[in-house]
Structures are given as structure tokens and as C-alpha cells.
Image (cartoon, rainbow, N blue to C red; front, side, top):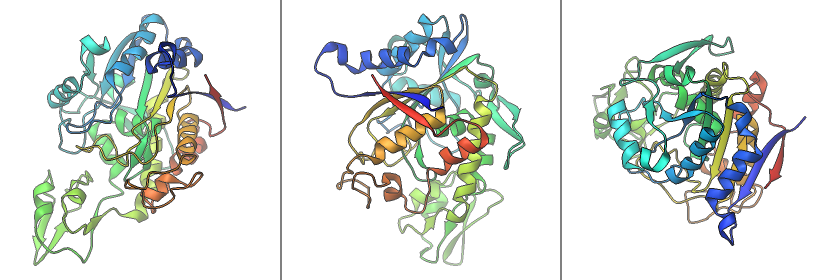
Amino acid sequence: MATKVYFSDFRSRNSNENKINKIRKLFKAANFESNINKKDLTAIKIHFGEKGNDSYVNPVFVRQIVDGVKKAGGRPFLTDTNTLYYGSRHNSVDHLNTAIMHGFNYAVTGAPLIIADGIRGENEIEIEINLKHFRTVRIAGDIEKADSMVVISHFKGHGMSGFGGAIKNLAMGCASPAGKLKQHECAKPLISEECMGCGRCLKSCPVSAMYLEGEKSKINYDACIACNNCLMGCPESAIDLDFDNIQPFIEKMTEYAYGAVKNKKNKICCINFLMDITPDCDCVPWSDSPIVPDIGILASNDPVALDTASYHLVNEQHGFKNSLLIHNHEKGEDKFRGLYEKIEGDIQIKYGQEIGLGSMNYELIKI
């Protein structure tokens, strides 16, 4: 039986059709109220955006979801986890300051902010999953302890997973830094012969895992945390991902998503925003031009069905040629392979179905 995925496009000619009302209608159509019991502590999992990024989900939109949770009797809080890399969200103090700067304050959203893994990312709970790559996964304590969860995701490209939607938001977004490291450790960067030994990557490494040997940069892989800051720090593009290990990375990521929802059966609501569909995750401190036009908003209780529908809708668009999209501009072509030709992003939805995270079989219902 096909999973229902509810969809609203962005066409609007009157106040009843504005985005705020579309979000409210999607919340109701997807029957999210049935997943939230009275007095539930409801985690609203959101990405607050790295400082300098502006493509994260608008906090005014988030307010509509907060109000929907309250109407259902839940007690919502906005949440995310601290980052593995050293940016503006590496600890809870910086993370909360960034979130507030981006408009995620109580006056706008109507919900308190809680960084779910604690001040330094040490609040975690080990969840048993017994899958191919992991026996257990490390999920942020306050997300695991929440009674229900709404997962709000900005659907966009990603340099390691091809694309990021609900699955990636659950996987990386609900893991403690130690859990993020477990996902990343199989895909640490490689340095090519093009390295000029300028040493700039040494400055970008937060854990001093880079060093110069002769006229080439080297990596101490025992110290490397796979944050991949060095990729952006190299002026010669001489550092790249280990693409032979990208599939295991994506599978590990998907197993973490499974662990994040394992103890919340029938307590998960997922919403994807298909707007400002940029090439990169909102973790980067910039926002590049979108690769396709804005599409709409999707809602479902199934993260696999939701991401599958989102992936298909993006690929149905004509790509923007004045963007980072290298090829696959035509309707029906895989836009994310056009960005990152060596990455099979759909592994996450295929493997998600295989391990029981959800179903790729969906029915798209336009409201």
C-alpha cells in the first residue's frame, strides 16, 4: 500500500493560499495531530543554519508548526544538536546565539530552544539497532527522551550524501558529535598529488590533524574527525572525499536515522521545504544560488516516502544553468548527480526502505 505524501505548491493569488495557510493545511491533511498526545514533550527538529547561511527554513513558517503541535495538546520545543566541525554551532552557547540571530526566538516561533545533546555534545543515549554497520547508535538525549517529534527539513544538495532531507536531518541532526563521528569516520578526506604544500589546510583543521611533510600536506587519520573543513580550505582543490567509501557513509547515516525514530513508532511527523534548493547543506557559512525553481512543501509520517517524493519532484524540474549544476539540466534528469556525479544520493532512500525506516512507494496528494 502506497504511503500518502501531501504536497502544496507555491502558487498563490489570495490570502487563503499564502504559505502560512498552506503549512496549516498540510499539518491538518497529514493528520499530524494523531501522532501527538496531550502533554507530549514534542521535539521540533530543525536546522538553525550556520552563521552566514540564509537558506534555512524561515522561523515564521516554523511558528505555524509550533501552533499546530500546541493545538494537538503537545508541548513543543525547537531543537538541534551541536556540530562535529568547529563553526558557529559547535557548542550550545554559540549554537543558541546563532539560532536567535537567525530569528528562532520565542517571540517569533512561540517555543523554547533546547540543544538536545547538551552544552558540549555529551548528552547522548545509546540505542540498540543491530543493523549492518552499527549494533548501537548514539542519539542526543533530549531528542530520545521527547515523546514525539516533528522533523522540519530544508531539502537541498549535499556534498557527501548527494541530497539532504528528512533522513539526513534525522541521522546527522539527531546524533551527538560522537555519533556524527561514527558516521563520518569511513569517509575521511584524501590529499592528491596536486598538493602544493601551501599549508593553508593546516589552519582550517580544528584538531591539528594536518601537517607538512616535505612539500606536501599529510593527514593524521587517527586524529582526523572527518569534518572536511580542509576541503574548503584548499586553494588548489587538492583535497577530496574518499568516494570509495561514500556508499558505506550514506548507509551508516541512514542507520542513524533509523535509530533516531526507533522508539517513536507512530510519533513522527515530517515536513520538507522544497525552496531555495541550494547545492550545499545549511551547515556551510554561505548560500549558493538554487539549482532548480522553488517547488513547494511536502508532509508525511514516513521520512523515506517524503524524501523519495522530494527527490522525484526536484528531478522533474528544469535545472538552472547559471548555478553550480554542471549537467543534467533537463526535466527528468538527476539534478543531484548533476551536482555531484560520483555520489548516488538515492542510496539513502533505497537502504532506508531495506532496513524498515520507511517505504519508497508513495501516493502524492496535492492539497
